[in-house]
Length: 66
Image 1 (cartoon, one colour):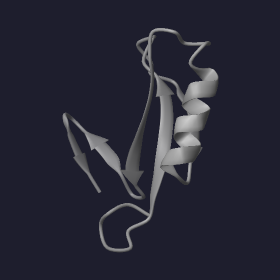
Image 2 (cartoon, rainbow, N blue to C red):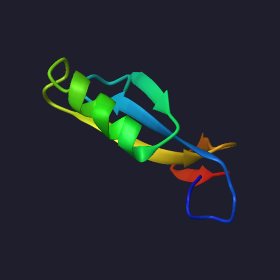
Image 3 (cartoon, one colour):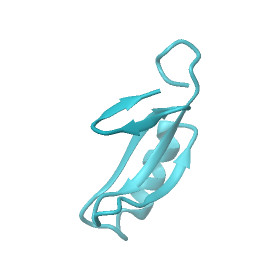
């Protein structure tokens, strides 16, 4: 869960080395996402990112909405 009141969320790990920003994994916790990010960082040496997204997240233009 994220910091908002009981709103479920997931942690998404993605690579930022190529233009398509491929999702590498989706996790329940920050610690799981961080561990996986460390594990695959050798495959994408330029950039592996992870961030929390609330369930129901959508990208619309240049803003986030849920």
